[in-house]
Amino acid sequence: MSHQHSPSTHQHDHDGGDTEMDMGHGMAMSFHTGTSETILFSFWNTENNTGAFVGSLFIIFFMAFGYEALKCLREVLYKTSSARDSNPANVSLLGTTRYRMLNQMHALQTILHMFQFVLSYFLMLIFMTYNVWLGIAVTLGAGVGYFCFGWNKNMAIDVTDHCH
Image 1 (cartoon, one colour):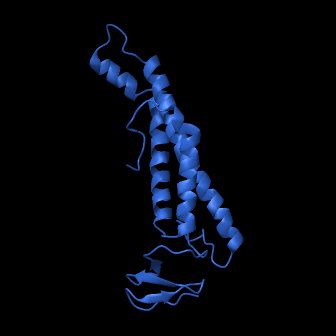
Image 2 (tube, rainbow, N blue to C red):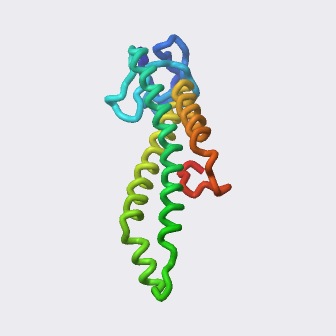
Image 3 (cartoon, one colour):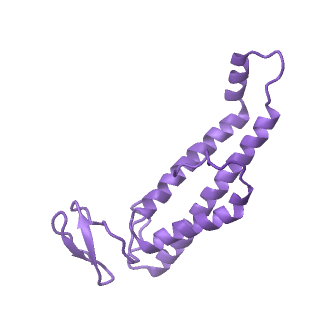
């Protein structure tokens, strides 16, 4: 069991290895390979439960995979709505702007954007646990997701990505 001392002390982790602790809060500030982690929320804790840790790896993999799927979905929806909502003749710029802002597709895109935004930060925070296995799960999930969905991109710069 980890014992916390003072800020920036050298600690002994559950796996018998040493980790650098910072600021006295018990978070490893260097990459490590332990299986006891608190992931995002206090209730998502894998301490002394390898099965929970492996299950968490799969959840994280699918979170990153879903992030890539969501980016693709948003791009497809954007292309579909842009083609359908081309500027009709005899409509003012203000009318067109109001129409594009206050339609169901834009509302859906806004909700999906917010979900993608939160998911991207969750993945970043998971990677920032400095746990090698969790980082690999994020990377593999994003890689497999991109392999499955990224082949159909039309833009060199991904405007739907939150992790530039």
